[in-house]
Length: 105
Image (cartoon, rainbow, N blue to C red; front, side, top):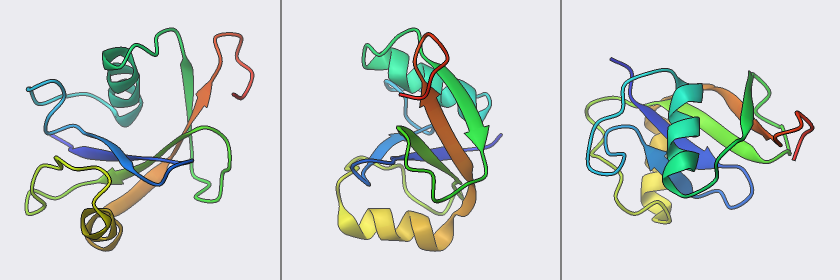
């Protein structure tokens, strides 16, 4: 099972850890996790596109494959935790969030 950490592009904060989505472990793809995370915060009806451009400036999430040695992220704004994800996790790509019309948000 893959574990994903999502860092929101605009803020630079960790928005989700698939090890704990509303108290349970999420299983699925990175894009499915982004959708489930957004649904959990009331952002329904979005479309997503996984790209491999780490310099994308659109709304979305940078996706990292987390190792089991990284503790579950509880504070997504903690600078040391964010740095630990960048240092110790493999970069998967960028999930761009599209509007419901399929246009970049």
